[in-house]
Amino acid sequence: MQHPKRVRRPQTRARSQTRGRRQPTVWLAAALVLATGLAGCAAPGGRSGATDTLAMADATPAGRALSAFLERAPDGAVTTLAASPWGGNVTVYARERYFAASGHECLRLDVSRGAVPAALGSGEVACRVAARGWYTQRLVTEVVR
Image (tube, rainbow, N blue to C red; front, side):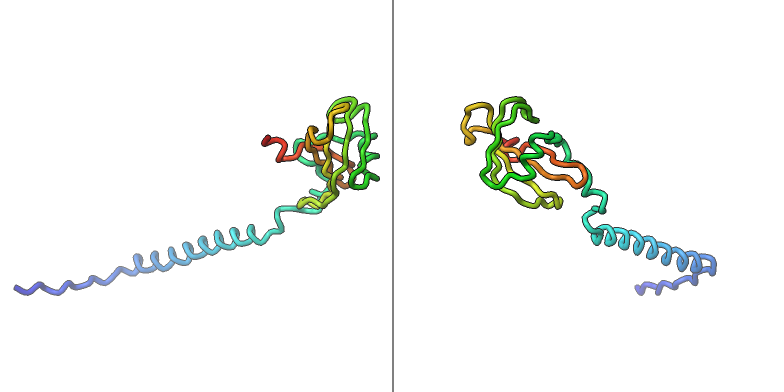
C-alpha cells in the first residue's frame, strides 16, 4: 500500500507576517545583549580617575608621625613610634617600595612591639592614596597565617 503524499497547506497571510516580524525582534534583542556584554569586557577595569583618591578597603590612616617616616624612609629604615595604628611603643621596619596594581605607591613594613626582633613582627603594607595621605593594612599573607 502506498502512502499518500502529504500536501502542505498554504499559510494564511496573517500567520506569515507575524513570523517575519518576530524574527527581527529576536535578532535585535540578541545583538543588543551581545553588544552590552562586549562593551563591559572592553571597559578599562571599571576604574575612573576618581578612584585614585579612594582609600584602601579596611585600611587605617597612618597618622602624622608614621606618615612623615613613610614619606622619606629608604628601604631598610627603622623608626620607633610612641603611637601608631598598631598601638604604642612599636618599631617599624621599612622593607621595600613598589607600585600596587591599584596605582598607589606602597611600602612593605614589618612591625614589632618593643624589643621583639623584626622577624617575629607582623607584616603590614602602607600605601599613599592621592590627596588623602598614607594608609596601613595587614598583608594578605599575614592574615592567612
